[in-house]
Image (tube, rainbow, N blue to C red):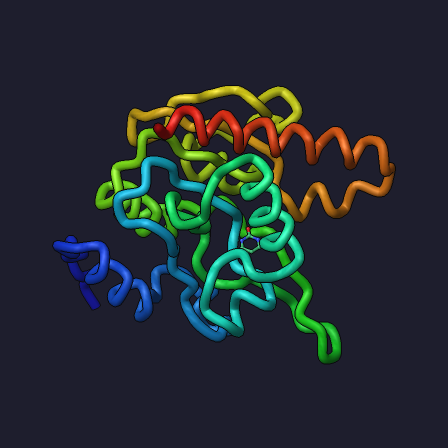
Length: 203
Ligand code: URA
């Protein structure tokens, strides 16, 4: 059948409702539900993760699991309140492989990120934040289309596809996986520094 022209939602809430029925890629088939962004609809900063994890998929809200807790705690320490930002993900369905009773996270591919960019772009258009913070390579790719190495990009501001500034930082789940304690502490401090920059840039 003919692909239907996508209708542009008029409001952020209409966009959210439409996203609940999304079938732009096949991640919707195994995931429990679409996980939309949350926070302030007139936020001056948008914080973008990769995709919902196991907890987020079941509960329908972003950043609730271990990585989310680390992010929320680091935001608080950096003086950035959740209520003043828009927290969302590059990809809005959980991608995983089942291993027994466990569901193991899989990175979204470029195609999935590009399909889901439709929603990220809509969120960005309605909220019009002054700055976007990309957490990890998937979010950085979603916002800039640049998939260059993170160690050269972290802490720097790039120009997003929308024409505005994108600060690139580490993903909290990546920080949790660093086994060397000293290296992990440094990366966490860098995330904290980036969140502090976001707090300053969004006044
Ligand atoms: N990791 C993410 O990138 N996003 C979430 O919502 C949770 C964990």
